[in-house]
Image (cartoon, rainbow, N blue to C red; front, side, top):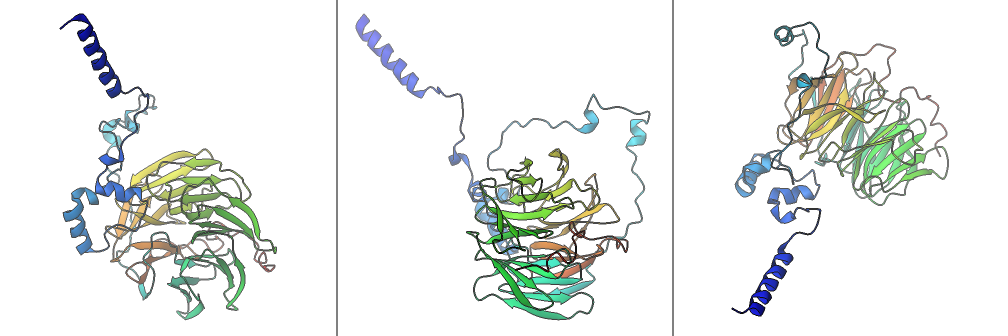
Length: 436
């Protein structure tokens, strides 16, 4: 081989090597490495999980055992070790010995009922993770959405009456005002209706969303609505031109959770796996955006005795219950719930929180605050729990499920007679007399 031929061969070899070399400073993972389960999770649909024992066996046989695990779509093979608080070398050590500190404490005399005190049939309730089909008013009236109809159940007398029936579509979300006289109704067509419950007549029809309504929340005369169009609208129900605020571009997907605290701070959860904290109803940008969850965040609730503490729960790919300091945006505590989280309520007296869950156990879980140590599991439902509603005194919790039943659980002690339930009980009772 002469010198010119060798030089040409080396040049061609170097060109081939250059073509195969990675010149980028970023490595983008290929979706081709995702399993079939990973592709399902990329669709961000919380309703795809197996719905019965047959579907569960079929899922195992077709997708493998990983379909039922808490599998991430993309994850590192070598994950960093999370340092426990007890291993923190900067933590102040007190004089108590480690042995005495680890001794189990005596169990408190806390009796948690393992069966519901009442079960009601709810035929036609829609099995949809993103829906809020039940809400309990401060006047002890429970509103229940059954497909296109809404019924009112008087928890004291046991009487039931039909409030409305939509000509088309389904009712997706219900939310009472603070004084319990008016009910806001979200629909699959994107409309928000306001009804006078006692007079059984519609007062307003609020339009503006481009998708189904996923969540509603009241703060005095302002009604906030979240939708599948990824927007949050603020409605002043006292004026003709009701739309006073439109929050677009913050959430990237379905807004499926909304809740106000007593100061008017709004928490919004979305199918984009994020939670946004808004300082007040008129804020143009969020105070904090919380991205700890890795699935849709529908379940969120403010703590009634610490107004800046927020509890959130994630969907199937996340299954975490988290406590946040909303003022600083700091994660206070988290726990693995082992299943999809669909609802959260707080106890008034016991300093506890109760969570509702979907596939695969369909249970309610009771957690201690602030440690998030599980105190008990309440089982009985045979389908996914959809949401939770709490009685005015905080003692009873109503769970709605895809098994078409409502179950009432005596979980907490009743609050004091002068205590107000919910985040907006300080609103004046006459605030909505000017609804137009």
